[in-house]
Image (cartoon, rainbow, N blue to C red; front, side, top):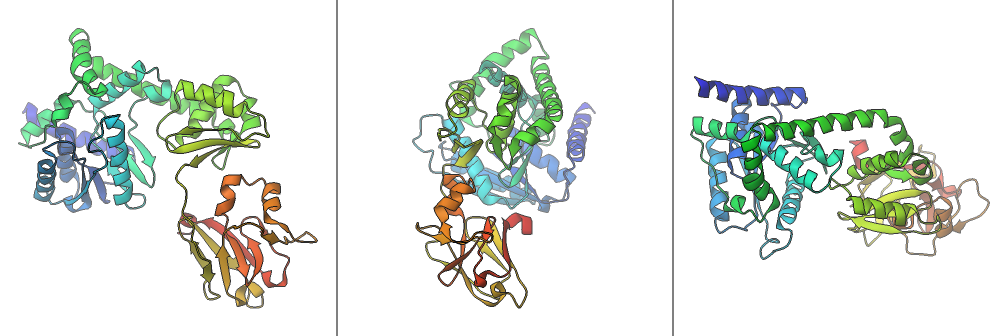
Length: 441
């Protein structure tokens, strides 16, 4: 009877967590499936709560173990036996890698998820209460602040998809008991017992000793993480007005930031940083940011690197720019008169022309080009044309953004710089707007 009660309890608890976070069980769900006990139990539970045909199982084969291909086959068999859809990706870049393998494997997994998952998909992961305790303890030993000590978030956005972890309130032992009740089979990854990895050392050496002295240690550590979550939410609520005034369009207004007390400054910087990277700045990095970047003169353009981004100052603002450069079209893009809107490849923006049949913008083909140097433009309201370079400076456009601003031509005449200005030329009657493509969907 007890076993049956525990099985029903875990299924009902998972269902409640989905409801509490307004995540529908009847929508397509994507499950990160290692084949281990935790993800196997989560897959089985979800199949009790929704039509298995709604579930897409994703297995990432890192090819680090000699058993990796067998595990992939096992995962496919389990997914098929439950009536779910199976997807897999094989990663080759980690073979032969000996440094920071945990972090690199994690990065490869998320790259694979980003490539596979559709826009606004929900990726479900099997992290549980013991994972939460291990994570919080690891971060405590690293000297993390309240954000880090909040541990694993139950939900967060990554790229274009939502990550959701409905088992964070369930212990590992409970999941193992569930697996035994339902005769589930799972993979035992030999690397999980290698205590050279920090998490494994805490799991096998530290937490058991703590629980021998304090049986509720893991549960209480997880509870402390939840307290940090609540404290962070309260702080965010209290400082919401200041955050909104200082962070403008994903950039930080430095003079406004520096008027605040130092603890508020640090909170706002960390809040801003979380909007573009899940990896927090270390105390050393934060100190460097304040001294070398924020503390620099306004005529300087200092920068520092963090997690694939360059943090740069330009005039009174702080920006985070991806290191990876966008590849621009090499030839002009034709915009036919019959097309009211035009998607710019790779930039993720759409241009829209607003003109009547009597306006010149309606009647003629246009081309889209990007800066080569030497362009001139005659904005409405000015008496003559000016070098585009000088206009960009006067409009305070950061230097690294200028190459990605589309320039609209009618023949050889630059008639519009969308988002900044329309030409006074007769061929520019009407207007052209620019917007992120997602805003138009």
